[in-house]
Every structure is written in structure tokens, then in C-alpha cells.
Image (cartoon, rainbow, N blue to C red; front, top):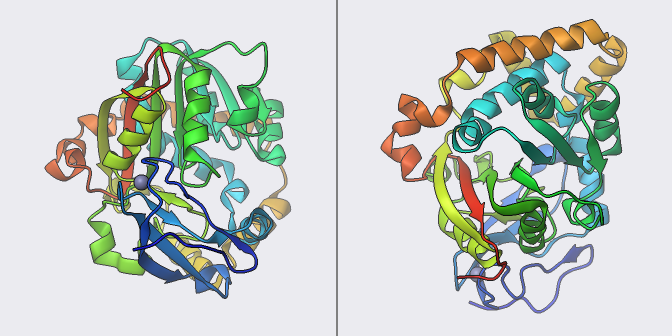
Length: 346
Ligand SMILES: [Zn+2]
């Protein structure tokens, strides 16, 4: 068990000292390769000796990561109907819980992509605001869906002198990518009013699925620098001035998660993904199809809204009440926390 002293060229050491507990010792946990992302090297996941936080160190430097994102990160090339189907599922698994816990007011989504979720929340009576790093995506949100979106990082967003704090904030599948989860949660503290609610969704490193799928578990990919469990994320939240309200998990393989995709499309998609061509194929399809007309976009939004009205939130379903979900051993972790007035740990 040791601290890594130096990083090879093109990589940098992270989590020294640990973002969660301040320890400087860690041990190798998993060494992974990602041929499907056309990356030649290996990625070492280490586990902190003090708190068991899992992190990729040495990680790729930002420039190398940006190149990898460019080639492989195809979320923004999704067809609009698919994107609305995906976020309405995400709403049921995660965000719906906020609607049960807080009166509808001002809500902030960090990592709001093209604004699909924000547009659904606005339809449900929330005053919704996004923060998104991709200029292309935030422009779509602002121009096509008319949801206000700040382009940049959360840390930059909260530096604005005229910032009006929010009563609710959420962020799914973002914290595992950021340079510093501690600074990210401190910025969340800044973005919220005292007593405000925060929801974080992220892959769950305590998932049973890791025993089952090993290196092929979906939470392992070259973009994930940090992998949390309920315990490590709750501890970091405490350090940044939040009290844990509740936590649960859901699986990657719930049968209801991809209800609309016919088998041939799933097989084509999986084959393209294995070859590393999915991003290019989706971008090409989007380019050939051109921008969807406003009426079609609105039809997708209304259909997704109707699905939300009809659906039960995941936490209230039999799967959500299953001991595995409540014991937080599913593939995706969701934590709801309340902002304390002060920012220090208890
Ligand atoms: Zn630690």
C-alpha cells in the first residue's frame, strides 16, 4: 500500500491527498483496458486506504481525455425521441423522488446536456435552469427548447455575483467525471439555499454487478475518474456541508429500462458500440436527418411528459423497494442530501 510518486507522460496523479478522507495511501484494485474505445493503454483503479474511495490514478491528462470524448462520447448525437425516452426513464429512477420531497420551485440541473429533462420539469411546474459544459448542447437547450442554460462548469456558474440560490439541485452521471468531486459539491453548497435538497446519481462501486461482470461492468470506462459507494459519497457530502436524507440504487438491466427499442436496433447498436463506430454512426444519422422540426420536438416532449404522468417513481416500485435496492448494491447509486447552513463537516 503506497502513494504513487510520479505519473508517466500524458497522465497525472489524482486524489493525493484523498478528496474524501485526506489519506495519502492507496492500493491498486483493478487494472482495465478499453479496446472498444480504441485506447491502447491500461487504466489503473486504486482504492483509498482510509475510506475505500475508488479512483483512476494516474488518469489521462485533460487534453488526452478531451480527444477520447470527441471520438467516443456520443450522447449528444442521440435522436430526440430516444433522448426523451432515456430522460423520462431517468426521471422515474431518480428525479421523481425530489417531486415527492420538495415543493416545486427553482431547480438546477448540472450536466443538463441538451435540456430534455429541464423541459420536462418546466412542463411539470418547476422553474428550471441548466449548467452544461458543451456549447453545442447548451445552445440546443436555449434555442430549441427555450430552457435557460449556462455554458461552463458549475464552479464557474456559482461565481456569478448575481447568483440566486436554488431550493433543489441535481446532477446525474456527472460527479464521476469531474476533476475534483469535493470542489464540485462545495459549489453545489453555494448554489443551494440552506435546507435545499441535492440529488446526486452516479455509478455504484459497491454494486453486485461488478462480481458478475468484472471488467465489463458498465460503470468501468475511461471517462470515469471517481467511483463512489453510498458510504464514500455520504462522507464527502458531509465534508462539504450536507446531511444524508436517503440513498438507493437501481440496476443497469431492469427489463423496463429500454421499452421502445426493437431487437434489431439493440443488436445493431451493440455491434456498432463494440466496433467503436456508434458515435460516428449516430452523428452521421443526425446529420442526414437534419434538425427535427419544432412540432416533432414538441410531440416527443409531450409523449415523454405523458409517460411521466402515467409512471410510478422507481423508489415506489417493487424493484425500488427490493432489499438489494435499499441496501445500495445495484449498479447506479442515487443519494439525496440536505444542505446545512454551514459548510464544514459535522
Ligand atoms: Zn480516502
